Figure (cartoon, rainbow, N blue to C red):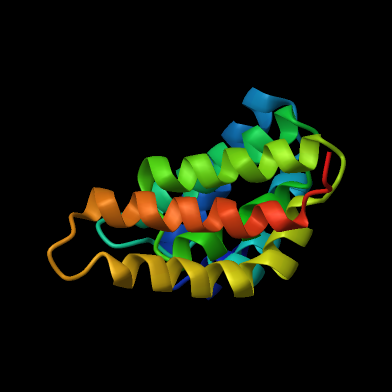
Length: 168
């Protein structure tokens, strides 16, 4: 399964070998099974293209970022494949670096409240959020910095995803 995920992410046989070794080391370090880690990577790749490197990122860095997300999911008792898919889809919408991490933290907090699963935020919230993110970043104009674009996109994601949370 891991082989198909790595190849599906554009990797080759060397990338598969590297991924297998890194997954085994990760599993030993975290106490997770290699099957659980591989299953999460497969889901993340199928639903969020997490093993395809972002601009300026190597395949190994993409894998390491995915493994970091799996560790977060494990620590918070969250579905690792779903969280990975969410990260991949948010990255696909242009969130990067700290903005992506903050969007993931927001999603985990919402799920932790027990009111909504991370998968729900992505499935139900992402279509509206992506439109709002695009609108708000476009409103900044061509002279806006990347930091300003990231901040606007993150705020739009949070604003739109918040509608899925119950009123207190």
